[in-house]
Length: 316
Image (tube, rainbow, N blue to C red):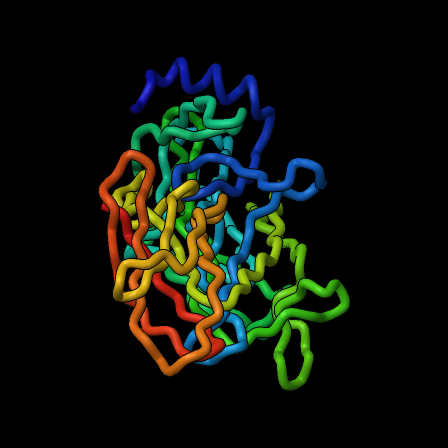
């Protein structure tokens, strides 16, 4: 996966004339789920909270985990302090979330995206960011992490930082606000996560600076009946666990007699819906998921009158 330094050098200089910051997914590939807009978008997936119905839970994001990528030039052998600015609510992942390499290879990814293959590693850093590090804990806050290193003989540093959206699995949201698609506090109507929020990732070493931004699109998944996420276990480039959503999985909801009550397919976010309004006492139904080319999986689900239940599938 590591090309010769000469290849890496020619490729990166053809693309970057100076220091650059890029935000990528967990495969170290760029993304943009809405190319029609200026900002590069990802989706925040809000699902009805079966334990706090009818409020919503921020269940996941698409893409999932995130990497802050820095491409930096310096004089070989000199000491450099790299200041990385991370926006709320991003938090670090893993015991050593920061890695530095002496080169990088750029390869084409799916749909014309740009992907990065690290060269030889020469530094790891265990600095952590948690939500409580931000003051205030609100949109617009940021946290700066400083990494001091010696510039390698290549004169180039590729540094990345493993992150995730820190509000995942939080609950107590409703849909509304000025845009009509903001995540708000249902009691006070305060906007907590505005739709199309921009997140600015920055770098500075005291002499030069660079930045990149991405935007979140709120996706509220509402349906009476049963919904859930279909995903397959995977690993990030540095071996940490993550998941990849699965689109196009067929899902069928049946009763104890095997009669079909509803069906659906997982969408581009890996979410499926079986729209079904149960009017009797709480009952056990059965949900079967058929991944494309895979073995069907069946799980029981308890559905209350006029209620909603969530069932997630981890496909082997």
